Length: 152
Image 1: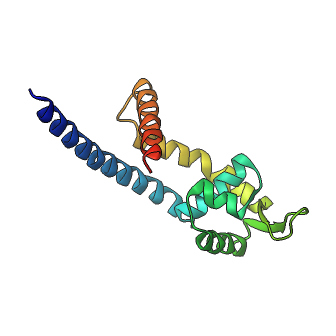
Image 2 (image 1 turned 60 degrees about the horizontal axis):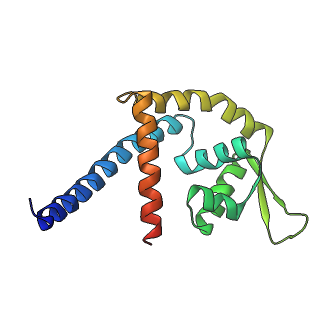
């Protein structure tokens, strides 16, 4: 096989990998969405609550960076969660232009109640591969992500 044939085959494998990753992501996302929807939340709202629960208070900008949302979207999501009584905004004492989100007792109780079942639902969705295969997939996907980021 010539190097041009190998190059073409590698390019085709890259395209196929993209399609397979996209389909797997879409399916897993559907599992996650279905699970959090049972609790009156969307995935973005759940992501914000889960971040604050596991990592503590964050500025709205930090939340956007962590869960990959634009600032306008974060404001909207935080407004909705505040209306539901799950979090409050509080100004940064050192820079009043910076606003932090803090879980309320109701928000903390909600995450404590629903997170274990959510983790189990995702575990079930990924039951098609073994623990060792998950470890390999994690390492390969990290490597792929880092490599792709360098090319941006």
